[in-house]
Image (cartoon, rainbow, N blue to C red; front, side, top):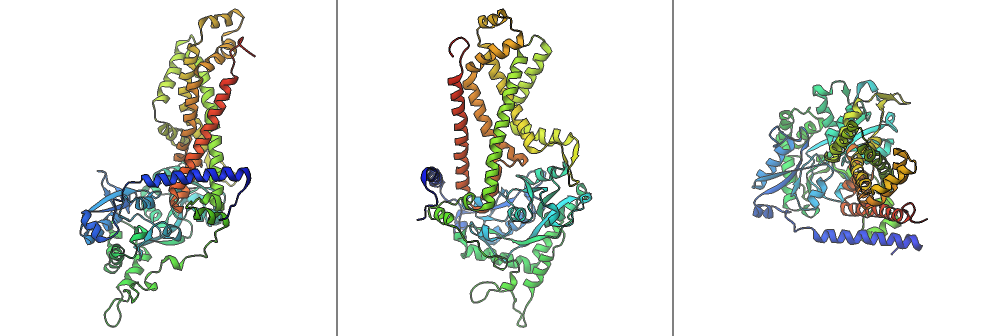
Length: 562
């Protein structure tokens, strides 16, 4: 066993890893019994097959006005169920969780625009041949005149969480990715000029460009990294009868032209991949047998699988001592040995700390000011302050975040950067501080006002007798006493602010939750990363609570101690 660290730091590091491993083991132990099946007999005995599809990726998978899942892949899922001989139970997944849905036995099969690559094959099984293929391209405004991928270096580019190409393309061209959980949010950010383009599947971009709403946009770059789309199974199902049934089904879809028919049905631009695969899989030899058929090894020929992963695989990265040591202990923490993941994670940690500090300072300032305004003699001012408190305390913070970012942010003037690109005046980080600070500030206003009301009247009168004006008495006498009265409630609200910083990921602020959600979909280390997140937030909150405890000890009532 290699111990890559030593000394006090080594002991702390080992303790943290042991804590993560313990929580991970407990999480795995508490996972419910497997409800999904890995072979056809189990599915038939269960009486249905659970198939996971996308609900945010038209026209492959989306909801109609009645809320029903429809699309090309839903049609394919129904055909799979028919071949198995049981009804299909269709469930919706997102790019970020489709692998985990399989691993956690929440579905039997996943058919959800899933590109096949080596990193995903370490997590789940991928059925071949592939039923579709696409590469990565950019949806961008025509006036930007982006001609090469190199033109995007350092520029803000919107992307969808969980896409297989995010990491590789960002590394290759040094992109400043702004990753959103939902496709619609990424597209809205593109329209608001918060990024110069939307990094996405070329097939989906081509479908968008057929819509009137995207007039004035283009797909200007050569497509990168074409990858086949695969049906996903759990790894233990690979090589079994379910794998074979699905593989034969895809072969039949290509031979019969079903996939070409579904492209036409759903208004998808005819792709060269499906045309070529239809020609390839329907070709026969002189004896009338299909050229693409299983050989003595029970596999289809390589030439019938043009997008096979082994044909694209680069030289594998050699693991270092730390990676070997951690994985031998059953811990997959790529943030410690993958330079890209580590840099992203540290960036997220710094942004979370800065975001928490900014929100705390702003909310405290608002709380002190708001509490003062609630006590002034001029009624309209009190009404305005009360209205602010009521509105922002009882509106969900996520709604407020969207309101500030997409609503008010879209109305502000644009500024022209050094490279000539127009961008919004304020970025996501600033809006997150404002939105979360204003939300927490409403509660702080009530907290400080309660503390002020608890200050005895004789002390307020003595401040006036000493010649202090109203504002001077508030700052020098009343506020310190009020702070001591309300310190426990203030501490609780500030702790909530730290925990709420994860909401900023919804508008692509790269804090801890944001970067964690980039790492675990590709690495398959959901339990480890979620537990790391849990430990770090526990430490951050502990530091805040310790600081507030020290403040409480140091706080002294005037005239009652040094």
